[in-house]
Length: 250
Image (cartoon, rainbow, N blue to C red; front, side, top):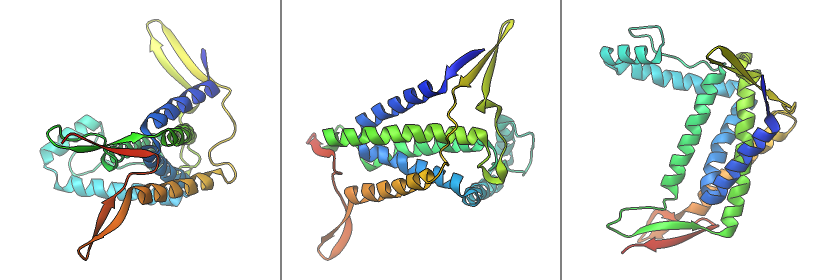
């Protein structure tokens, strides 16, 4: 059995996210914070989490009805659903795997929205805007990155334990140990010194949800505004605090 110090692993992940946030700046890192705050809220209110999964299942069922039967059979075979015909795959709100997949998708969406909302590249044949991160923006980004890293670790742990998922959930075996077979030998990797405190202790989750809302409002107000020209109002783009806009090309 090989033991992994969970505290050291957590510090490594938090440090990595802090570095990423330092390089990206606070505005892009704030988008990730917003999505993670939503997932924290779902842990606090399992009824809302169930409604969210139900909405996704409704969308899947609708898409399933309009897909050709050939594509449905191919997807059923690829997904390993064990069903065929018009029976759509459905997400289980009480499954840790469902929420870990949603966590990964949310992080991907946050990265995409950050790149679109604050681009630093453009067509090479025309002028485009680039936003350089200032020292203050980088430091604040590092703090948000560290917070995001801790939230991700805490969310994964809560999902694996399963007790706060809709319906009570079921704890995953991955929450205690991971096993991998090698030729003639079984290797078991187990987390040690796992902290007893969780993300749902005391007032912390509500604080993180509030931080996510505050960061979301700050990101919107610092990037977008209303510009009035010739009697018409349109969205105006601003350089967020901690980011310096420069024009490249001509």
